[in-house]
Length: 455
Image (cartoon, rainbow, N blue to C red; front, side, top):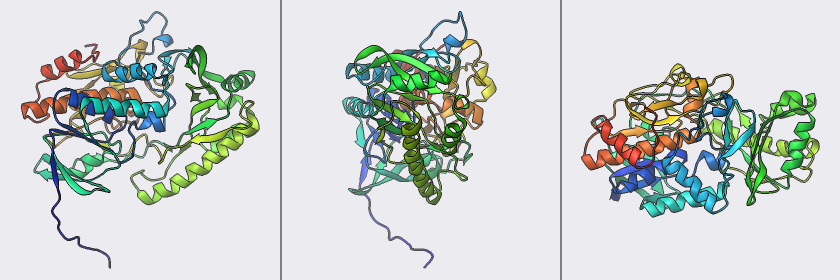
């Protein structure tokens, strides 16, 4: 039997104003932003927690600031504020972040290190969503979109409570994979131009000895001091140049895609040791992802062996945390009304419909935004082409790989999330599509909610 025809069933229906698909980096911010505008907002997330890449795949949150340290004389400016900064303030209150610790080494990459406790981040954003009045659907799969011409009327979800329909006026796709956009019939590509990863938390380690080892090899690249275990002025970030290490150590680390950049907010614990793996096909391929999940767990085990063997202070290291599934840097790239180019990014271009300012590039110093400047992300870059009431934010925008190396980063995704959630709420209130929303209204609302705009 090649096919099975499902029998039709009646599904229970819920009605909301805004639906946010994906409770990751941008999705939690989008949902908070939408609900704070006074509209009924639902958030759909497949896992049992919220947070996405900040709690699964990153080493620090890049970046709230312009890269001023790489350009002597350039003014230090916090570019991303609003709800993303509120999250950091809440984490500070519970001891869950290093704060915006200034980088003391490798100024040409980032000027601050904002590292977070992964578990406290999950708690903080969950509480903020609940306080905002968001209807939170965790452990819930998004399985289809209900379309009426170019309009998304609703989504179909599935959980242990069964299948159901959630209808809404406006929708935001923050799934990372672009699932909602794909179900809605949007145009997309699958570039498969980044490795996937599964970062591990490592216990029984000494970051001072970790730093001293790399320093003795003249290999230290990244270095920052901040709040650790409640004390300021402590090492919170260390990275190393593999080319300065012994050939055998460097070779084995390279073979498993191991990065030596780590951050910590606690003594005796590394929040992230990253293991990368380049898949031959897109991470939307379930069967190939299954093989990649196994390979990454083998690499995690090998990484601990290498740390115990080569790095002082890590002799009794063990895996204390893994992500439940691999993390991606890009799944589907959704075709939107505008596609930002890397040339626009590095030249600090701002647009007449900016929704945020951003100044970090993950390929620095090879590719850098000139003179410590910022660039803008236009509202139209989040409007899904051909669909009247769907926005997308985060890793799904920007087709050019080098441009994507900036826009996909965590704080960019968070800033996009606040704009997308706000826009979706305003569209629902005004009963208009995403292209009919007056930009001056969106801009005024964002600025009133703490968003910083440079143009």
